[in-house]
Image 1: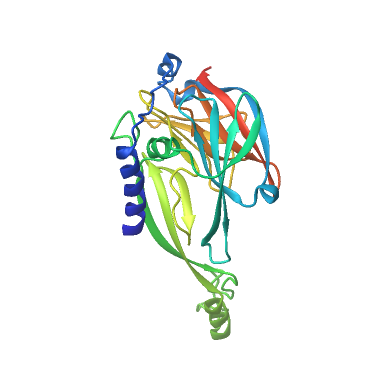
Image 2: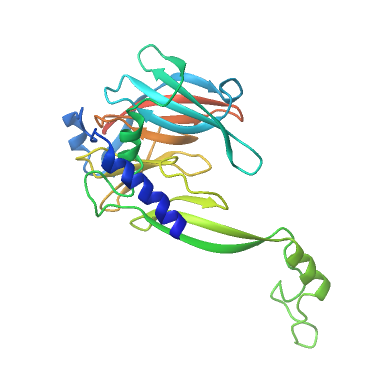
Length: 273
């Protein structure tokens, strides 16, 4: 729990040091999204296709520029142990639909990521992420025998699993350490035997909206949650990751996985239905 709390605290410290605040280019249209059930994606469009083989890595960050004209894409490579071995930086021009390699992360990424991936909503401190952790044991070979099946011997006694079967199950047991992020009891993501990466599967809306958009870690549709616990599935995204709410609050970007190597970088308006 301590490591998870520190991870979220780090994101909070980024938010407090950045010069920009969410909503700097705010559009009043976002104020109409008070109820998550009333919201929908408008006219999703593909901006660029991403080939992880050509870009050398897997997605690590997706962030909006303050003026809404560009997005930053981070690609990372890892070794077999999960350690980062290289980081590459790209800027995507929205109108031109082009992607350009840059030497380093633009200065505006830190302030944006600070509120986008913060422990709580920029609009309401009480609307926040609650981390938790647990351990589970997973068996590659399931215990067998009458006891495992809930049965009993012919004389009415539980025969149980044999010693050999029990040893086989124990030999294949794997301990899973699971970190979970929850908002109002809703699980927005789980990390199994790996470090939590805040913001990789969720994005707060900028103030004054009390909204959070997220996707399952393994990919799936985008879900929208408000501070009253109301939730809706946003049609138009099928296998989404790295959702990112624009600073003015009227658009959402995300990566739509197409196959093992390719993603589409998508953008759609977000507004009341």
